[in-house]
Image (tube, rainbow, N blue to C red):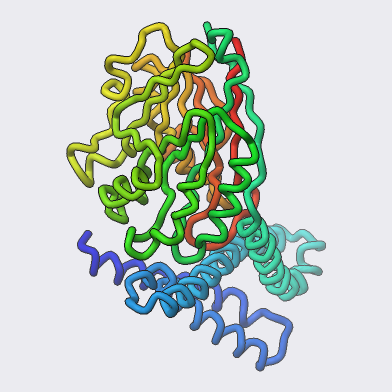
Length: 385
């Protein structure tokens, strides 16, 4: 679909969904006309702000772009929850109506009150989820400890630690101060290596270089390793690859590095994003190429932004894959839809001889909102199987 046609379709759909919310909630609200008019005006403003929040980075004035992005993305977060709760309310009312048709006295007696009171309940629930989600999203991600049992792990690698961050999405609402707090917390782990599994940015090097500069201060014994995510390709991946290398990160593009730790070798490989080949044919994700020439008997770790690289990683003979991309769904109920695209949503999983760990992400994308899917900085420890 051409971009202009898609934009018309998306904005029309957003407008229709706002109209649906207004039609289902406002007439039944037990409030005076003034409050109903205020609700209608808010829905009208939200109809404009939601698409504007996604398009704001095209505005040349950075300060104005950021303000519009904040307003639009906050509106999107509230609208998303309001839509879900309105749909759930309608499903509940349909059941109550079915009870009335079946002649259930209790349903007949209480249906009118349920219709009225549920409008306020839906609105308050959406507000509470949005506020709680905002607070969860804006706090610095907590440390999640994970032990991964690796078969035939050399003694020297028992307890080897990896600090993983993923999906920070430095951009319209995540700036330097937010990233600095993440870097400080990662450095406090004193890890053996750091893995950054993609989607670090949402924007160009020119607009965000000052905000990603803290990545240069990441510290670990064997350095920091980065693989591209889909959002790097939306933001000129080649420029970001050069910038991250300038900051001292080792960017792995279907290739590997061999670490020597206490006399034992550990292969750390990385693939370009699963969708990378559609942006640049030379960036087709290839776990087999990433491991080519690696020491046969060494333990092997793959950094791959999307969990759906796991099947190819298992075939290539990796022991562990570290991924992100899903955000754990970021906020309910979108976590329920992740399995439609990805084999794993979050946490540690097993595919034959391969372990896959999927981070819920260290930042957030779009609305500054996390509910039921907390952000994380992961400290993985290799232990013998």
